[in-house]
Image (tube, one colour):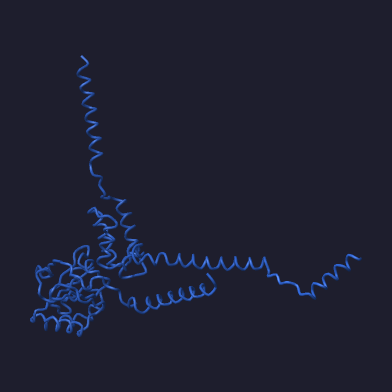
Length: 175
Length: 163
């Protein structure tokens, strides 16, 4: 190999590294967002018993869009979204949507106090002792909200406080 | 007279043989207990990234979700799951992102091999360039003498000889 070939190889290698870096920095993922392995997948089945004692299974909600929210009483962003979720529930549940809130890493007393304080009336339940439901959904922090379509597939995950347009856009398309 | 002790001895041998056979054919349990279980929990947890505080492993983190993950690992080990099955469980739910080391298979091999290949290529180029330089320094190009230079050298040599 002559000097020209080495030079060409060096340029090629340098370009390759540069392209990989640009791809990794700007196109491979959004740096401030954790990728979810659940999007587009069938939502994991679960069964819960709400704080008021009502048994609920995801299987039993087939054909209805579900807003599945993971929350905790100690989480500040959960306070921020509490009224948004409650208002959306008041508006969309009569139309056929289902709102579920699962409290994780929280005590029953603290969860109930939070529910009373923010006047939450949709289906609210604690996760089990090992947090199986939140682990099944790959929850990374609270609050996190999963939008599940009528066929039972996860369409979107919202990390942090969910906003009104996100819920409205999803449910208006589903109902 | 010796029949009874012989029979006893034979029975004892049979029992020992039966017990030995049982220990050979009984399935060896993979279920861990006590300190072994905790060691394994720590080992697997160290391979998982804390979802809340990403710079740490699940083993090091005290975040609620990490504690849940540790409990899940323990629960799965107690149920007889292998390390591979447990890691697969978390990858299926969180994606490969949850592993602190990308698995050495598929496209990920590029990540593991690229630095090595890069070092080898650069090393090869450096060594080759150095070798070439040394070789050229050792054997400088020989340029033939001009007629004028040749005459001058011969003249000088003759002068030395005559001296």
